[in-house]
Structures are given as C-alpha cells and as structure tokens.
Length: 263
Image (tube, rainbow, N blue to C red; front, side, top):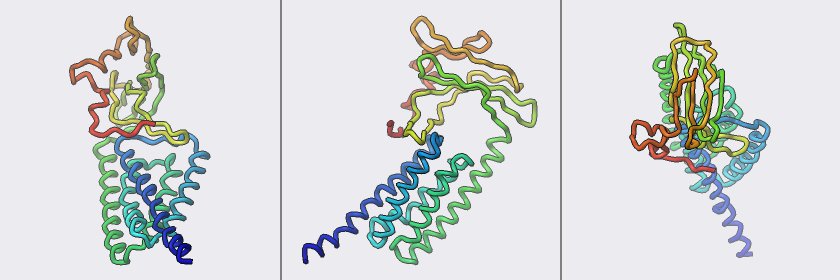
C-alpha cells in the first residue's frame, strides 16, 4: 500500500513535465514569428496534429494544474502567444492561431496559481496585447505603405539555391514592377507546416510601372554558378552572394544573430 501511494503521488509531478513541451512549443513559435513567415501546407494534416497536441498538452496540464511547473507554463503561454498572433495573423493562418489562442487562454485560467497573480498578469497581458496590436496596425497602415503586391511569376535557380519572384505592385500612383531574389535553402519544412525564412530579400529589378510582362531567366555560367537575367541584362550572379566584400554578402547566414534549428 505505501508503495502504491508513493507511485500515485509521483504521477502528477512527472506528468507536469509535459508543460515543458507546451512552453517550448509556444516559445518555438514566438521565436519563429520574428525570423520566419509560416505557411500551412496541408490543412487536414495540420488540423490532426493540432488536435493531438491539444489533447496531450491540455489534458495533462489541466490534470496537473496545481503543480508549480504547470502553473508557470500556463501563466506565460499568453505572453508567448502575443508575437505569434500579431506577426502571423492572416486568414490562411487562422487554423493555427485560433486553436492555439483558445488553448493558451484555457491553460492560463486553469493554472493553479493564485487568483491575485492571475489578475495582475492578466491585466498586464491585456495592456500588452492592446499596445502590440495597435502598434502593429499603425506600422502597417502608416510606415509600410498602402500597396497591393501580387506575385505574377515565381521560379527557382538551376542549382535550387536561390528563388526569385516578380511583384506587380499597385499603389496610389502608377505602381511598379519589382523582381526580388532570396535564398531557397534556409526554409524549414515540417510536412504539414513550413517556416519560410524572411529578412534576406533583395530587389534586383524595380521599374516605376506595373503590369509589365517581366519573365526573369535563370542560367549557369562557366563555373556552374546561377545567373539571373531580365530582358537580356544580368541582374544577379551566384558569385555576388559569396563575394568577400560585406556589401555583397546579403545572403550570408552569419548576418543573423540567431538561427533557427534546421530540420
């Protein structure tokens, strides 16, 4: 009997370790939102994954809500959720944001922490959400400009190292046509969800007129380096990205202070 009691008394402390997984997932997504765009590749597969994780984390953390690890993880989930919802918000990502937000709210209120702590943190989080959402809205509406960007062409280099796409940009004037190039090897693919590296985009062609029929052409030089030409004019060479001069190394991964874990 004493052994059974000891075993039962260890169940909740051991199960509370699952809260590390929840906190890690929320921190993982919060960090990713700063450096990566997200794309839901397969909504059915992703929805199934969400249901499984919600059952595991939600069930285990509600059952062990009085444990200190679970209480702490439950309290800080909403803090991690703030950059996720602000930076990843779009109609396509609601399948991820809505369930994740519901889980964060439920685990916050089910946390075994005292009501005083919940009230204080809840008030702070509410203010942070209001300020964060308002600041992001002002940035997008004022500083980012009021434009409509449509991708009209997309292609990958022969070596699969780079990709380019043509943007047809509509604004209050005559718009513009822009060709952007970025690395194609820094993305992280987890099957049903894909994290797309951001911050390495480089404009190689920009004309102050939109709706132009621009078709970039990839080729290889004598050293098998990728070359991008537009209207017969070379706009990018693979050697540019590896040039020792810091001004050219705009795709260098070392320029980032933090790197995400590659799959």
